Image (cartoon, rainbow, N blue to C red; front, side, top):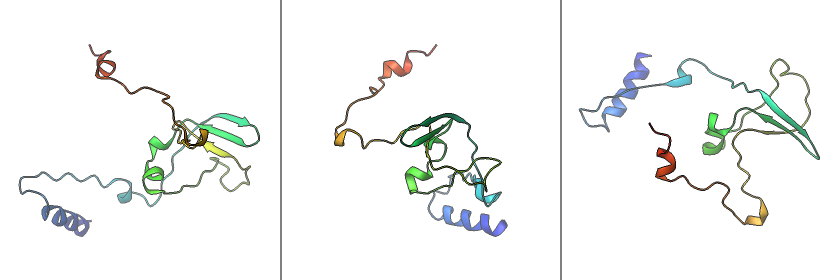
Length: 120
């Protein structure tokens, strides 16, 4: 651990002003090799394809959008059991490919008045 911290501090000090305060938050990489995120299924829609909606989304883990990182989904308690093929969807939609490339405003941008309207 000491060698790891020395390497980080030395590298940061080479680029930061002398008066800079260095705060390190190493995150999950220091305490675990793996992790999992658990969501609840909120809706299952059986159509031509089956859609399973969960109570989470891309906002919980931006690695998928930013780095094209892929993750495996499973049913807690049945990870080794065979499952049905489905589309897993969540709170954040990324379906910008609809309407043959035409766009439309779905939600208008907030104004400063909108943002401050509920301040007390």
